[in-house]
Amino acid sequence: MNTSARKNILLVEDEQGIRSLMAGVLRDVNLQVIEAAQGKEALAVLEDPAQAVDLVILDMNLPDMPGREVLKKMRLKSNIPVILCSGEALKMKAGQFGEFAPVALLKKPFGVKELLLAVKANL
Image 1 (cartoon, one colour):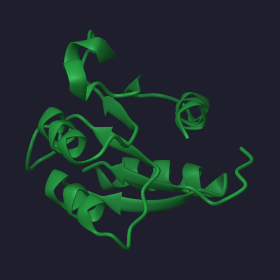
Image 2 (cartoon, rainbow, N blue to C red; image 1 turned 90 degrees about the vertical axis):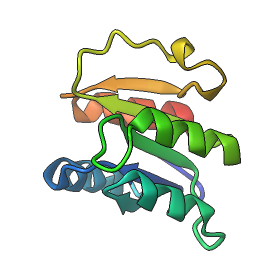
Image 3 (spheres, rainbow, N blue to C red; image 1 turned 45 degrees about the vertical axis):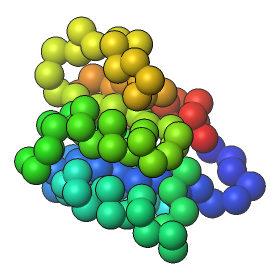
């Protein structure tokens, strides 16, 4: 993945092992990764003017608040692209989120190729 300027990804995933693997894959293609384990932590990153985030990868099932609520709060403050991830049966369609729709949906487990294709398509 060639990017002229290094892009910043906010990775929101509560499972540390999954988060570390995903962050490693993203860093291997020269992306800057900011990691968050909870929704409130992710929202704080987005509110910090020192953190320039180009894309969010958001798990749907977080311990402190549902991913859908985090997505809604993100969308009320910014139009930043958000990729949703879930291990649940994804019968979801981006359109069901209305005005808060994510740019992509990834069903866990997904491979490196699927992750990088979704990221590349939305940066």
